[in-house]
Amino acid sequence: MSEVRVRFAPSPTGLLHIGGARTALFNWLYARHTGGKFVLRIEDTDAARNTPEAVAIIFEGLKWLGLDWDEGPQTDGTTVGDHGPYFQSQRGAIYKQYVDKLLAEGKAYEHEGAVKFRIPKTPITVPDLICGDVTFDRTMDPDLVIQRKDGTPVFHLVNVVDDLEMKITHVIRGEDHLSNTPKHLALFEAFGATPPRYGHIPLILNTNGSKMSKRDEGASIGDYIANGYLPEAVRNFLCLLGWSPKENKEVVPLEEVIEKFDLPQINRSNARFDLNKLYWINGEYMRAATLDRLEPFAAAILRREGILGESYDAAYFRAALAIVQEKVKLGKELGDWLAYFFKDDYAFDPAAVAKVFTPEGLANLKTLRAALAEASDFSSAALEDRFKTLAAAQGKKVGVYIHPVRLAVSGRSVGPSLYHLLEVLGKDRTLARTDRALAQFPG
Ligand code: GLU
Image (tube, rainbow, N blue to C red; front, side, top):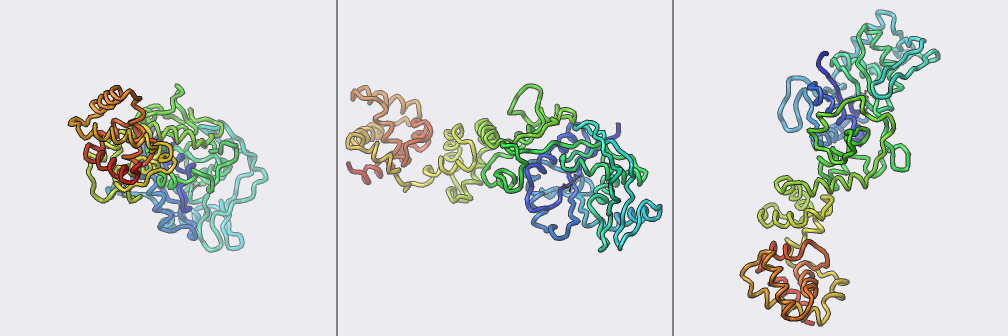
């Protein structure tokens, strides 16, 4: 078999829709699975929508998802080969040749200034790799406008000419294009060319069964970037929107998907979009991420939120990350878990103050402060020992020290394991913060 060549052919609309991202991913996976080529083609013939910003959003989304294309300049500045990504807006002369050819052969004709292609009025069967054989009647189909009065070519023509010119072997695209395929097959036939194989991916529906639209939550890849999802988690989630490994696994490493991915396994029924599932998968990836992976990801988010400065104490930051990592499911939540590590004048949660900083709670905090001041070993294990020894000596439960000191050093009643928290904050910070709390709430 000749080399597989697939393409992602988005029209710039101002966002990268989750359906488009999945189409791109499935094409990319198929190319990587077969050792073929993944081509990017921007279908930007609609001048009104074709803005540099809209194109940049597509590039940014693909780059974020790690979907590199095989021809032309990449988003990281490197170049693969000397073609692509292709822009239809730059290929007008090519389309014109094809229109002229159809006109010369009598397969198309002029009609009120436009050019119309003669659609054969016979039934045709699309042998779809995903949907199976789908037959279209065509006996009543009108001829197809392929060039408008103003001379601009129409989607169907440019799409077919480019698939032909770019030697595309498999067209993997959304099911909303299935009804266009009889027209596309007719054009391939008119050009005397063998058509690519087609595979139409079922739609993505909301959990309530309605078709996902632009306005639905989670419809745009940009939203995932903004909310601090990990791209590898989103990619994993997108893989499962219509495809699944045989075992019912939810977290599937990319290498495994590439190895197993094939077109016949794509589900024929519509995929259900479930944001809760993505949230869960993201949490799994957050938990499993190495600190080397997490640090730059988290730092970028916390800088954006003004929590972290341009330079920061990397060892302290990594230690803090390590103890909250298992609690955080989404990048957007990081600030809430980490802000007080980097801000000594945090506010004290009033509800927690009312409950924990009672006269008795504050008295216990003072006793604990004295015990901590004597500690030379501030490791979590040594701290745990010290808390337990103190509690036993005073005939109290450890909890009576844990709650006030947590509130004192963080301003809140929930957080990571207390002994680990104190270890990360270190002795000086722990004592200073406790003193600040005691000064503010003398009891
Ligand atoms: N530009 C078309 C779209 O964005 C692509 C159609 C195709 O993949 O053939 O829907």
